[in-house]
Length: 113
Length: 111
Image 1 (spheres, one colour):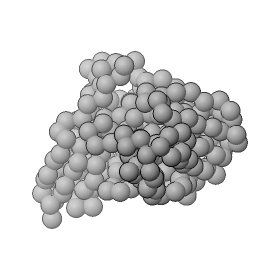
Image 2 (tube, chains in turn yellow, orange; image 1 turned 135 degrees about the horizontal axis):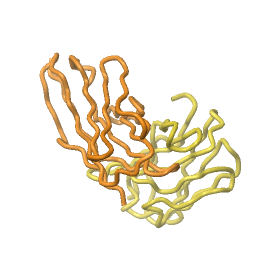
Image 3 (spheres, rainbow over the protein chains, first blue to last red; image 1 turned 135 degrees about the vertical axis):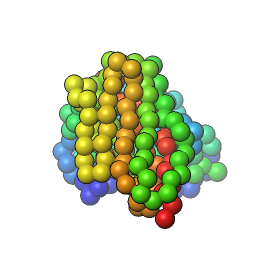
Image 4 (spheres, rainbow over the protein chains, first blue to last red; image 1 turned 90 degrees about the horizontal axis):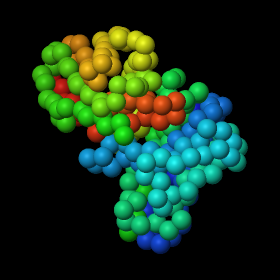
């Protein structure tokens, strides 16, 4: 979807290094989300944001932090990457919460070696 | 905690056959239910969104039903085509901010 962009698309990093993934939107949507997708687990919510500087934890937030300093950008940071954080990370948008459906980015494939 | 289950995990059908994909959830107090399609190595594409007050939604060959009381949704794809081969994900909105996802059903339509 042209209104949501994730970067980088692929990244390989070493255990213990910090990593930041970026989600950028041009839709001016209020809600933004970070999910991870792993085989056998489906998609699991890491963190979400309901406005600038307003964020909250999802079900698998340990080891991750987020920031949203402006409407269009939502950053996900792995402070010290571990092999268990190897995954595909998806950003999603929603206009006024889940009632209006989600739009997903193309994903970032992260490998921690 | 809302649990979402999709059975079967994989399905293979010949072209032209109708597809029936099932989704069940444990907590009937939902806001909505959304079906997504995911192609290998790609993101999720929204197919249908059913609000909690609705019983079904239709788009072209796709029809999704919702029965909150029994905790079930079914996605029907009529006259399947090889291009329908993908993984189909069910997601339940159980409050205004979050979705709980099933693990998906991977569909293969044989030409």
